[in-house]
Length: 625
Image (tube, rainbow, N blue to C red; front, side):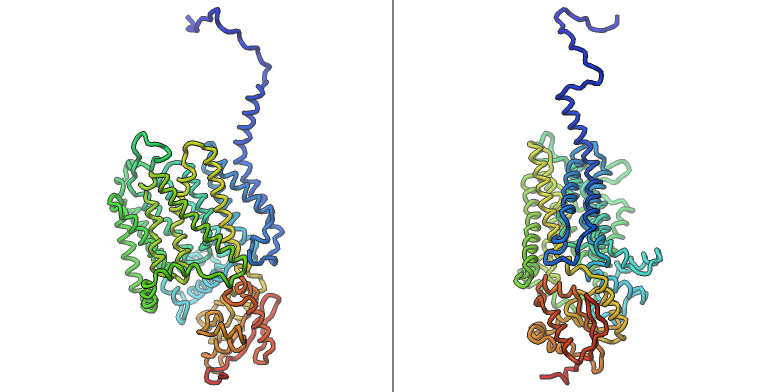
């Protein structure tokens, strides 16, 4: 018996034979659509990156004004961003697209946002990056702490970042960090990808949620603390510690049969073979946590406190304490010991300010929302966009806690709350509100992903919502990240003028500028006193506006008789006055005109973008009343 069923008389007639290779019309269209859509994720990435690189060929940096790069980037650039976003969302929802392609998309987004200024600018971006280069060079020259550092002494008390870069320079044989410091923003953000993936995969195994949270993080990270600085280094390590701790937290699976709209499978709590039960620390892994904590504590004054507050919040649930308390105790002990020994000079000098700040929590919070009346019109718009973006992120995270009950059982909501109490504790020079957003964002991004990406009813609507949300966040990021580039960018002529000034100024002389926005003027800071006119004694700014020469004389009247002084005025200082309103927009021009008309000043260097004057300040005892 062959086992084949018998064909009865009622069996239907066989369908007509089709020609070999023939395709039914409807099936052919569907197959073609499926084939085309499956290729799009692989095509859109290289096309978007090619368009991005082509768009940078003809950018006129001289045309930047109160919206920075937003005013000069061509349409082709924004087309590339849209194609990159479309390709990512197609890729993340197509299970046939491997994680390598998703990694490439995220790195492409990082490059498009953070490598654009690096590729466009012939010099290092941002005055604070230049300042940190000066500190690094001085520490290498002195083989450790820099004596006579004055206002730069804070870096002697938290030298970890500079010690690491000094070691890197010795190992690589490079003479200076200026070359690779320009690539710090894309590099720091690329390095963050690893701990972010570790953090999100510690909570869920859902691929869409994990990669969606990563994408949302980079779309909302507008604060700009990714340049060559101790903060960027310490923040990267903060996320590493957070990821390692959350990975050790005991998981809690939702009850069987729960509604997928209200719960989502968390990472299970069963330990893999050979591992300790959830919450326990293997000695090697805990030792690694201690090393990373030590690097944070020795590198930055604020990040260890953010870490302690975040860990304290994570330790509130009893089930987490076996994991979190050892890390919290070690972080608190290291921070206390460091502050009481190495950093005691800074803390003792600023303790009265810290105490006063604790008594004015409302002032600490509002200091980051300063008035915008003196800023350029474009910057007023940018400030409101930044505030709207930040508020949107927090509101979406709150909505996630309401709509997605399962995320309440993971540690990320608590981690997002950790930095918030510091808002009321200190203003941190008006930046605390931005730093709180920075440290909460890794956790907030996952909550938003859970809100907009969790599978459920109406999948197409959810897909559209995810695209709209991320594009809106990305649009806000471009306003916050690119709008001040007219003052962050330095022309080669400005760099040359600053270097000429440092070479001409003998040790002990004064270096004077309207603002601190001068590239390289902090070089040899241990040999020169510095005067920043916009931060002069009370009444100096008002006097500078009324009478520029009188204001300048008052600012430098403390100098010893015969001390030479060098005043540098450059294009970027004028841009800072215009954009931020720290001084009237014409302050640099008016001071330059007044100095040019005085016989007490001599020009020692001049080019199209900067001028350096030499003069001898009049001592206060001889100054006119």
